[in-house]
Length: 319
Image 1 (cartoon, rainbow, N blue to C red):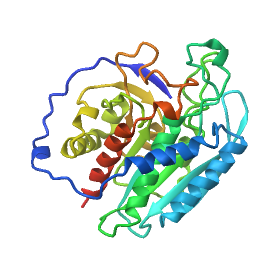
Image 2: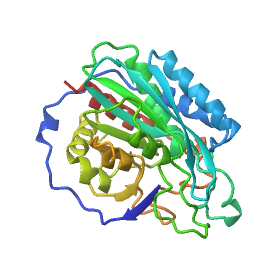
Image 3: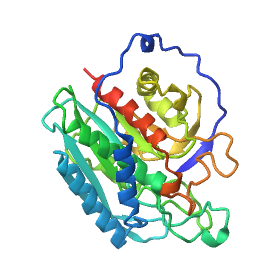
């Protein structure tokens, strides 16, 4: 994904309701999410048109089905920045599909084909293992699905969407101009062609890079533009469950990510929970972003726990 950095400042908005709210829902198990992240990485980089990509697709589908979700796949041939045809698969797993009141939770599951932000230019054409930038978001969704599969008290249906072809955006070393059109290809396709005609949801939450060491989740600019009320909902939930330090009430950056077409084309108010490192010289997305170091060694269970428990609170607070 691309970013335009903005200045950070503390929000003046208060959340008095947070002091009265109580934690609700089951305990998110970070060990479980960590294992799902590790299992994806065991296939190797899940780059487009690769065997690892196909094998991981089957594994993700099987896990969601095993948790009692109704699963469907959305296949499409999408054109990459260089004209490469990408065999894309969006994976949609639905909890309580009959419920017309729905919440969307999403992440991308493909791996960046090029470590084009690595400090060593010899690595720029190597694929990224994508433990954080891809696998972590899917891992949190799988653990949420496992927990929902054991519950019958949720008031809404939930659609987990694993978007494909997110990370085929123009590499930094390419000669062509990066205008943002070749990022989030799977989400662009789904937003224009949803898995159910006329699909609607109350709101959506995108999980991107939600497992890194030292991660904090500032309030992303596009999210605030389209879905300030959802930002408030999620950041309040983080406070209630004791993870407010992971979710500072400060402005981060504006990010071209899967939530953009969901907002613009589908009209679903959707936010991006995405790591922001304001003091990292290499990248605001952290030192492992689009490098060969995006590996399991840099995944932190505490970060997975903070995001996962916050999402439990968000989902189970819906009435």
